Length: 626
Ligand SMILES: *[C@@H]1O[C@H](CO)[C@@H](O)[C@H](O)[C@H]1NC(C)=O
Ligand SMILES: *[C@@H]1O[C@H](CO)[C@@H](O)[C@H](O)[C@H]1NC(C)=O
Ligand SMILES: *[C@@H]1O[C@H](CO)[C@@H](O)[C@H](O)[C@H]1NC(C)=O
Ligand SMILES: *[C@@H]1O[C@H](CO)[C@@H](O)[C@H](O)[C@H]1NC(C)=O
Ligand SMILES: *[C@@H]1O[C@H](CO)[C@@H](O)[C@H](O)[C@H]1NC(C)=O
Image (tube, rainbow, N blue to C red; front, side, top):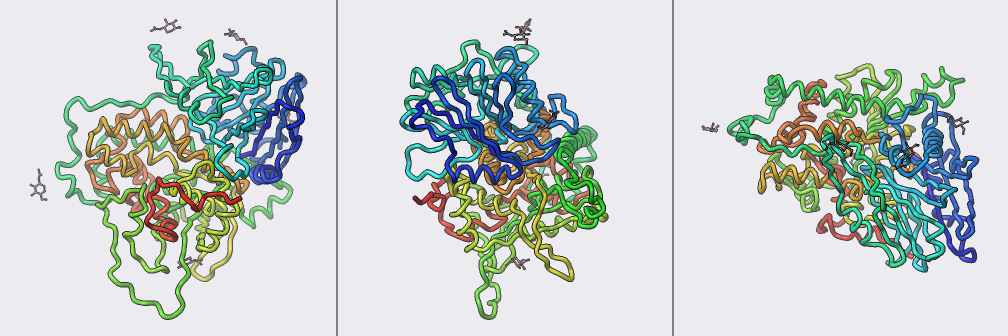
């Protein structure tokens, strides 16, 4: 993960040749291994490029890179496939040389259509005075834009700078395609025209599926001197995934069990599904495609930073890969598959976050009637009310801590010779409030809801990896050094894990469920991924999302919905059914049957502060004070 930024000015007097100190600081945190600035001046404009690199593979390549023609490139991405790349290559150089070799716009589009992996980029094409930029199809890397209200400058950056007040906000660049700005004509007309090259799916039968509202969505929040237009040649990027299969069953589905409410909630039930030939085949295809995605994500990095001291490395056993770990089925399957590909002498860090209230002094009062959530209740992930159901005393353990520890035991029995570092990350109210104010609120913005606050904070503390390793005889402080963090995001969206899916299914059947799945995946860039990238990147670490691998998404999109989930079955079984079956095949046990639990409740962050808020409310705690 890197920090990239480009500020463009159309008026020499007003142009700052340095980035603001706070912006520079934030970019450096994302890319601590090298920092570089580059200024390009045209007749009518000036561009300041700023690149901050987190070194993960190949030879360290400082950014921005410039070639002999004067083109400049900033890359915050990972090429996992699609473009030829050897293990020792740096993807920045390879992407830049390919771009420099492009003869026309369609060449540029076909290059970005080919890349598999997360990216955001900024490319200055010197001969034409064009600035190109954009984010990958899912928006797995953050990129923001900010247009100065006087119209004499604009900036693109991985993270925003601190601005108090309502006007002049940074906004996320929509992941609806890539954009091109003609800097010369913008300077002359004092009007910035963003030319959009959208994503489109073209099948063998020439049926195209367009993001028809991409233009209007993008234009909605821009100032008057900025406009978005479609490119006149109707050029586009090819979507990297196949469209969602919305097929409905020909005949009424033979429900897996006539009496769904009386289905025993056990591993044996999952075992019965696996006796079906076809189901078993699909489960193994899923395991295979996910396994390859995880392999790419755990092997694409420099393993020995200091080859001279190989022996030392063995003895100090440094983990290179960490997993955001609740012990739920998503993180368990990722852990079990990562274990297949990570060298056996290397530990794996399981990051488990819990928010704790300080114990009240004095003898602890016996717990009175603690209301437990049953498996059949459906608390909404989107409202904090669900959290209030668990009226545990302050020192009770967070649900994710309990399931995390149980998950650890399962993994230890799947592979006893692996060192599994279960990192207990306890966050107090004081620490939460202090770091939210100092750092996290600046990273979460421009997102601003209660849900963004809860998840942004939980993910920030979890990915920081500062906690405790607890063993039978000792508790010792631990700081995860892993630069790569795997997260399970994308599983709930695609496999009907949210209670929203169940609500839609109950009112509108499989058709409604299909629509909900399509909608969830379509908005994941603006709802989650940019935010999570800013939050995790702040520790000089890189998030990788195996469930959003292009091949994994295409595989899941190709399946009819009933092979992914069966929401006539109870919670803990029906949602993410395919993933649960995969878990069983991987040797996992209890975790295969855990119902989906949203991070804000599992980690108890939602319980720590106000509980009477709705998740979609604007969060006052995120507001930046002048
Ligand atoms: C990688 O980067 C280094 C340093 O910038 C450069 O010397 C080398 O040629 C690059 N490798 C490739 C394959 O582009
Ligand atoms: C763009 O250039 C490539 C050669 O690099 C050529 O094959 C292609 O036909 C050109 N496309 C257009 C639309 O001019
Ligand atoms: C699809 O489009 C291509 C190029 O425009 C054309 O050659 C081909 O015949 C079309 N195929 C069908 C099935 O329409
Ligand atoms: C459903 O289960 C109940 C009790 O387990 C049983 O009495 C009933 O016959 C079952 N219904 C069907 C349709 O199998
Ligand atoms: C973390 O907090 C929980 C709940 O207060 C407590 O039981 C546990 O011992 C703490 N863990 C560490 C390592 O301090």
